Amino acid sequence: MAAEAIFPLAAIAAFVGSRIASIAVPLAIERGKRSVNLVSSDDEKNILLSVMTQLDPDGCILKLLCSLEASSTEGVHTPKERALVNTFTNQNETLTPYNAAYIYAVNIGQHAHDAALCDKKFNKCSISVAELRDLLEWSSNCGEQ
View 1 (cartoon, one colour):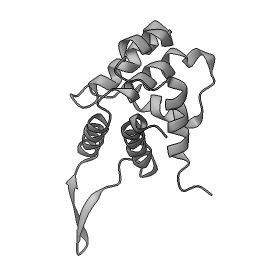
View 2 (tube, one colour):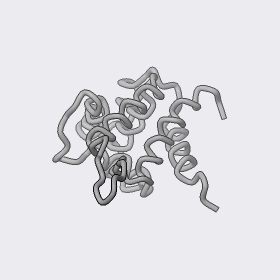
View 3 (cartoon, one colour):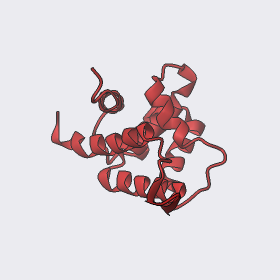
View 4 (cartoon, helix red, strand yellow):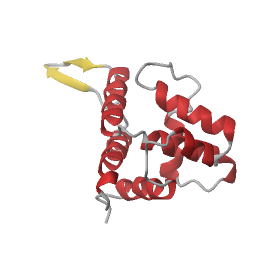
């Protein structure tokens, strides 16, 4: 695996881990019969998105999101790819500084329907979309027998 793939892989792994944990696993301290939530579900999502952004400074996940959405009419997405895109295409999702870049990438793909534009727009990422798709599948299968 190329060294340049390490950070996007880590960011993808963070996403996959959050999906496995359903993002909304409450962080709580048990006190008798009461639990006190230390972090809200929205805060958890924001923390995850912040970590993903820091782990992916070249915007490889943005490139992947854009390309997947640009090719969405082809209907060849794996369940993991659909889960990644669906995370940022929720119409009820409030735009925040944490998710804005991801929603922007999806919107470019939705309107352009051209993966080449995604490559051009997110050109800091030197990893091909095919390799990013493989990384998503590979990281999603970690731990499976």
